[in-house]
Image (cartoon, rainbow, N blue to C red; front, side, top):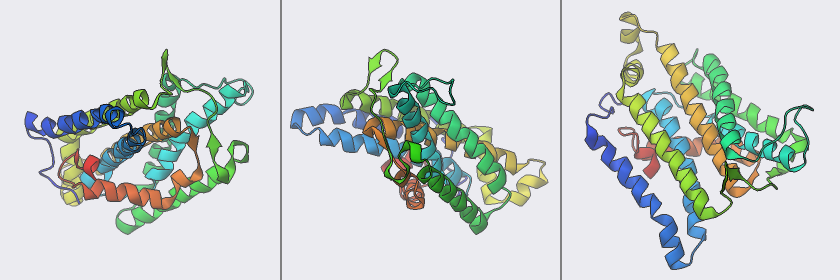
Length: 284
């Protein structure tokens, strides 16, 4: 699935993602003009899912590896935000000494880092395999995360966890859906920037070369496993960030958001938009 011509070749490659971000930025004004606030709610979900699809594209499109555990990483990010907000609302320290929080300036980085840490562990194990074996082991990890969330009875279990506290971003109140949309859009812009730069670098070249012919890459003294692990971890970081944004936007998270078919949806989004560009998954 990798395309050796997929790396950005000039500043022209920034035109399409810039236009996409600009067009998405018009959604709130259009929503206000038409009196249809539901449009912003739908667009927010589109932006959040686009973040995961672009992040997954680093693994699927450039790395040539189909991962079915990104819904689990996505859900971990969401649960970090929801659990911290739960303890903040109830003034109940986590483990008896860690305070809760409802500030995305704190919880969003923590959610992304937690998902990245889990992705590093999953990747370190899963990347010892390839092909259908990689697909199956990532699917198995996803189901482990799903049933772990179901088992969290204190945090709603199968019914999910409602966020009762007001979500903020530093001094900024982002409970307003229009304001939150632009926070999510900034997250998508950051994801596109980072993934595009990675794809254009030596790192991206090696990642695509390993997907095209791993034997030749090894023959010149490069270990593809380390590059794939970094790609998987970075992808997990942004998946966790997207999950955190979804939980904050809908004030709710549940195991449904971690189901294996959601992972399949992310793969379809990444592939449907085309694997030749970083911004294709946004269209997907």
